Image (cartoon, rainbow, N blue to C red; front, side, top):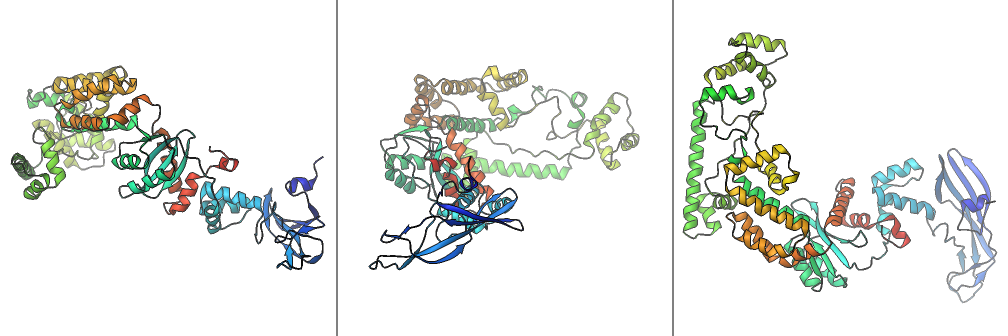
Length: 551
């Protein structure tokens, strides 16, 4: 049968439990050593002559709802070696508590686990609830002082950036893709720091990365023998961005699906076919005049930018002369025609929930009395003014409405980022409604027919990992009529080596993105106030690293 002493101190067989006391909510264990002789720490000569005794009171792990404290009797011995500089020494307890420590080794290990899992303040709150009092400064000190076991140099390395402050300051994370764990964290994403790390860890054979030029240059310098692999998800994401830029130039094609030729009918016919939410009063005359003047000035700037570009001036000079930003100049030059400015939708009003009722009463019941309609919807809970109802009734009577008003539910519209997936997904995965919308797009713009086929060919190429079709697709895309696709194809041609590796090797950035997500969770758990050393310790820590392997 296992004794109580063995349960309490499994790693210290030379201890003896003298007494157990209860003081409020604290259990006190009185313990002393049973050794008859102790070796001097300097000369290693054993001594049994006791000089004095004193009591140490280290805190131990709690037991149920009780805190536990040891009363450890420590003996001080005379050193029998006259030539030893140490005259007396205290007996050590290496398996129980360190010298001068106020807590046992096992409680210290508990607090370290809390610090690595939760950080400073949350860890301190949980430690207090568990019966192991420690301040957040203590937990952070334990976290910083823990030496993580060295990681072997990874054969397959994943590298990516992570944000200290998004859009401003970035760091670099390095992940062992074979062992599924991060190996290091760098405080920046410069070429010099990544190159220095790679030179200090020779043996990396494969590196998975996104298409960042910074990482490409650093890997080429620091590990020229390594095979660089592009991430397939990032390649498709770059294509998605190119598709969206093209669709931004076809906003008119993406609007009012189901109404192929809205301008051929009269106002009266349109009013009778439109749902009630499409009918809005026209703006005042001075608003229309102001909008016209603004569009005219913007059109003149557009013509000026085209003229200066034809003269051979650089982008910076064109922007300075036209009085616009370089980004606006690039947008003007990339557009096939004058880019109309997208109008903002009007916000919903208190009358909107009752428009369908008013529309039905007007056309089906032929009730044309605005005051009567106001009384009816007021009884239903309408809290607006009669003037809003009067303006709506006037719009119904005259058949005038704003073209920029929200589209009726029967006429569908897409934003560019929504229509992207109609071109990226294969035909079989589209719903019947989406297939009908895609056919409507292609009827309105013949260019989109061949253009979608080109996009679908690349998506199929990436899914089937067909290297033979890569060069053919790049050549076809280089001759496309859209500059965005030509630019995408040029990038693929420049990165042909890493694209081929992405199609032949199984490695990707999936694990790295997961580790970046974990890093963000840890950083936000500390409210973004963690210093780099604390963040690095927590990111690289794994509970099983103390057992010699990475989780």
